[in-house]
Structures are given as structure tokens and as C-alpha cells.
Image (cartoon, rainbow, N blue to C red; front, side, top):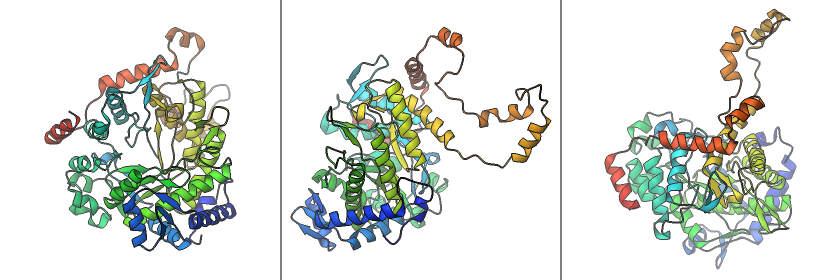
Length: 495
């Protein structure tokens, strides 16, 4: 790998340049000889048209194919993800991390800890909370509502994202593109042409033109989506067709395989990182065939498996090790990365959930993984919790504060302060304390810091406090401004 991003390895001990090159070389060998099985006839035909080697439903990749795709994709590692409300636009770059709501849980826990099937009201409540929480920068489908018919599920979720939020959207189906165009008042033809900011004046609303779009970005995207590979090295037909449609319409794609060590991947941290790299690179090549320079996120989310229960696990130390290794592979290629935050294998909002969630938050943000959904997820993606969503917002604030660098900008002022304070007094009454305590010290929303007697008198557990916070936020929720015609059309989809 000649065009290595040297900066990625300056302060990390997980992978050095030598290990990176070995993993890259091993991945190229696998992609050349094993290839990727693809269930989409259209995608196989596209690969064949562009000169890639194919054999039935298999596509094989040369070093040249991979290197060209990496070069194209890394050219858009600065891009702007648009929101219906321009103040929520996100200017992605290689060092910026954005957190978002979790994805795809079929069940939900209520505050008492009882698990039930998620429904449409749970979905809407999650979107409303995501709109109100600073930690949720990108919306998504925290739960799949079980009371919505399968043939109406995706349009129900997309319509409610737009109705109840004006933050960046997540697309789950090709049919979502129609509602996305409605939300931004554009045509599909305009969506297909959203390549470069140099031409954005013709197809972005006046509000977005005047927003704080990073002029150094080369690309814009009206939404983001995820393409999932089935490990080992399978891209199902529906995902292949979805990839084609999203790439053609300039939608930023998270390439997010999830090989599980010992089950769908080798029972090895290194082996799972290699397999993950093969799966991301192979799909990356296919996205760049369709739209060179399309913004993508390199999936840094291989996971583990508990061989006693044969359960896929996301909260253990091996998952964090593989997350770090995969993130460094992506950054070594100069690509944006995608992981998760708040991952845990707990069956309740308890110490188990909190410990693994915080471990995941710190690891992901310390590795500067760029796109991080996950807030509100529990039970290895099997369930979600609105209370956990609130708790994860607090963990996000904790972690971001912890990772802020210590600066020496005010060192002279501090030296004088320490020299002049009387040794028999303290700093409580110092004007410096009154000026700085709000910004110098983190004040959590939920974690109550007091003595035992006051805590006992309050009589509320953490889950009770989170449930109260959920109730308050939902009662005070205010729907973002939305065109009445658009609102009417969206409600027609839902009905």
C-alpha cells in the first residue's frame, strides 16, 4: 500500500505500519483468490463491464482494483452530510466523530425491565428523543416496530423520521429515496447529480446554501445508509441492488460487515480483522465503480462470540480490540470509518450494560471513528431502551469531556492564582472559580453527586431518573417546522 496515511499510526500501539501492510497484503491475496459472492445480477454485470474478473456469482479483485477504489474514496474523506435544518449539517473529516441513534432492535425494555416487542409508538418516541438530545447527531431506526406490516415498514420509518426530526436521515430501502426528495424539495435527477459542492447552488435550498457547509469538502450527501455484508464474503442480492441505487443517487454508504470471531469469522482477533478488511474493500471497489469518489465509511465493527452459549457478543474486550484494529486499517487507507457506541450484551439497564457501554464509548471516540450510531441499544442488538438512550447521551458527554486535551493557554493566570491564594483559605470563593466552574467541570444530567442521606431522600434509582427524563422530554417535545404539503403527503404514506 503506497499511499499510506502515516498520521493514523503516530500514537497507536494496536497496529503499526508493518502490521498494517501485512494485513493489507493478506487481504489482497484473499480477494484475488477467494473473491466475493454477490447475489445481485446487476452488480455482477457492472463489475464485469468494468473489467473485473467474474465467475458466475463471484467477483474477484486485483491489487490495482483495490488501490484505485481506495484512492477514489479517500478523495471524499471530507464531505457534508445535509440535514433538513441546516444547523444540523455535519461536515465530516478524518478526525471528526458524530454519534447517533442505535439501529434495528426488534424488542424494547420498559423502565421496569420487562421486554416486549417494539411498536410504532416506540419508534416515534425514539425519533422525538433523538431530535432533542445533543448526543444524537444522526437519526435512525432504533427499533423495528412489529405492529407495522412488513410491506409498509420502511415507508413508515422514513416518513416518521422526516415528520418528527430535521436532523440527518438514515435510508433503509430504495423506496426511501422518494420521500427524501420530498423532504428536500428536489427531484431524483438532482439527487443523482449531488457530487461536488462547486455545483451545489443549483440543487440545494437557499437555507442550506447559506449554512455552514465546509467549503473544503468536495462532496455532499442528502442522507446516509448502510450496506451489510454476510460473513464470510457474501453480498446478498437485495443488498447489492440497494448498493447500486444508493451509489447512483450519491448517498453516503457505511460498509458495515460484522464477522463474529469463532462463528462467521476466524476464532482470532487478527483473523477477524483480516476478514473484515476483505469484506469492506471488496464492497468499496463496487461502490466506486458506480460513482467514483462516493463518500463511504469503512466499517470498524467485527465482533466476538461466546462459545459457551454460541451468542454473538459486542461488549467484550476482543470486540474492542478488533474495533481498534479495523478503525486503524480504515484510517491507514485515508478513509472515514464507521463503528458504534454504547454496545453491550446486557439484558437489563444495569452495571453490566453501563460498564460495557462506557468501554465502547471511550474506545470508539478515542480511535476517532467518524460515524458512531448505537445510542439506546442493548442485548447485543436484540433490544433497545428509551431510558438507555438517555443514559447513553450522558455517557457521550462524559467521554467527549474526558478526551478533551489539556491546554496550557492560561498557565500564567493559574500560576498567579496559586501563588496569591492564602494557604489558610481555599479556592471556593475565588472569582476564578465562579468564572470557570461551568466550563471547567462536567455536570452530568442523570448521575446524582451528593451524600447518602440526600440520595436516599430522593428515592430514585438511575433507571427511574432516566424514565422521568424520557417522560419530560416527550411532553416538552416540539415538532420541527415542516411544510404543510410535505406533512400531508408523509401522513398519507403512513396511513
